[in-house]
Amino acid sequence: MVKSGSHSRGMAKLRIIGGEWRGRKLEFANLPGLRPTPDRIRETLFNWLAPYTHGARCLDLYCGSGALGFECLSRGAAVVTMIDKAAAVEHSILRNRTLLACEQGQFVHADALVWLNETNFAAPYDIVFVDPPYQQALLEPTLAALQNSHAVRQGSWIYTEAPRQTMLAVPQQWRLHREKQAGNNRYCLFCVQEHAIPACPAPL
Image (cartoon, rainbow, N blue to C red; front, side, top):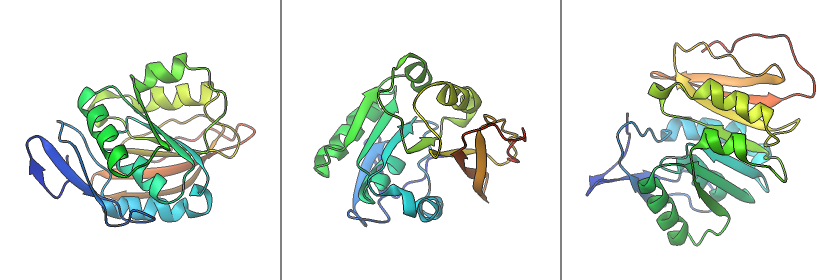
């Protein structure tokens, strides 16, 4: 479902809800299946992440509207790398980055799963957002690729969104820190641990 406040010429709008750019409205590509994280969920998520956002290195996989990436930058992240393979997404992300004069927002035009598997990471990310299209069964393969890469480390935070009834198997080193549901969505925040913890599917 695409949630937005306005639609025109194939574009929709979202509002940044906190930080430096609070109240700013951004346009994004109104593509089929694109689901910007709603305001209420973003507010809860960034309350969870409040102690860790300032100065963080962040990764927004399947960034879509850019709602999570720009929200994170507004709240003081040092850099956010946004990944998406849709050309229309690239155009809107770059346009919004220019509008906000935000050089810390980096965009990579790529398939997120392929990019994770093929990139040699010079440094890990502190916070990772993983919200792929629900109908493409990309979440679990992406989480596995994330753990197997050098993109995360002990203490990294990983946020996921999935349909409410999904049973999600996550890497054994990840501890479920917080979870909540809203409508048909359940969203979770995990923290990477040094050692494997007892395997237990996140109750989505």
